Image (cartoon, rainbow, N blue to C red; front, side):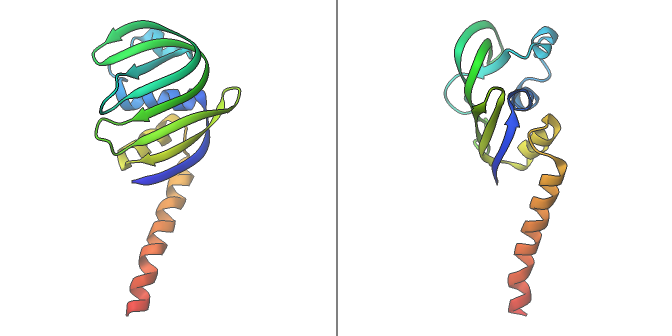
Length: 139
């Protein structure tokens, strides 16, 4: 797992949740509406949208789609438990993302624009450097 701490737009984090959970069955109208977010009940894979105003639209499979305005925070957990991320509003539609992500979630974070490919490349470089130093000293 990779520790994540970055800033991201609300829309990029919304896209991450959709890509990670319901891309194959979200209605097209919900996908285009920036105020519609997927939520999932407590338990493994819980997703919670904290908002000033939130209305339930429709339940499809295990996802409940909500229309939410003035988002304050989002809590995302993967069903496997390997990814735990929180988005907290810092200014209007921008926020801070913190938590841990699996390799699969990293791909989705890049695809959705939460992280850049350069960030992932730098992370991979730093872990390779960190792993090679101890073995060089041992030799």
